[in-house]
Image (tube, rainbow, N blue to C red; front, top):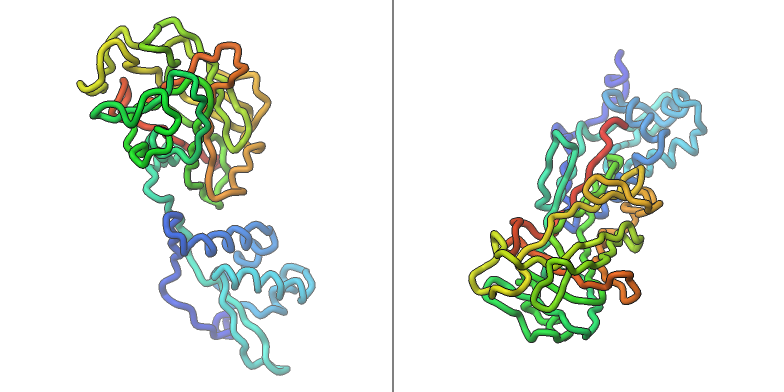
Length: 329
């Protein structure tokens, strides 16, 4: 008699678990699954229950662990929906029989773009969708969309207008702007690198091709890198800059990539002196990932910053967050 015949426990034919990080109701299930599979012992239990129902006593014996510990592990796996169990009659009274309740687990990541060949998942944030800001009233500051300026020039109040979400160009001299990306991490995989790409340049009145600025990039509260921006570019029109935007003002920026991986911090694949690594960011500890773009008042070159949206400047994109997984583990 086979173990399955010995322990006759029914399971559904539909054994694929599909969860969506974009569905709030799935968050609790994903968290429970993450907790359930974080233990090597529970992974061993899932493996021996994959095709064969087993009683608690059999599981404890096969893994050489106490029966009480086995019961606690099964409880955690049941809470995650990875195991089902039922009481059945045994030779000495009833016994609890368990079986793995799934074949595959799939976790979708909002509307993120997935590049399986490069092991990456990406999400784009419009430049106007910032979470927080602290802008100095020191001129210049402001924002614009395809139709022209939003609000008043050099007014901090402009940064709190509802219309800010339409912004395609944002500029300020001193201060910061913070974005919070939804955490699209797959809890079943190990993160190798996180990268933010954006088009940006310095900020001067009008424009100045030679106008250096130190722009600090922080991720999850950790200062990763400081980018030395060479100037505020306006000698030619941006490839995407709308006709409503006048000549003689900022036109385009440079597309920069800011990365943190297991080895340290990089700008455009060039390693920086920062000691921050991917581990320091604690990416799994929050439902969001914070990106702060800042020009400090005490910077060596406090030359401001321009951030370009997908309909302004030279590059058709907002701020793109890309996560690369280590699939060798």
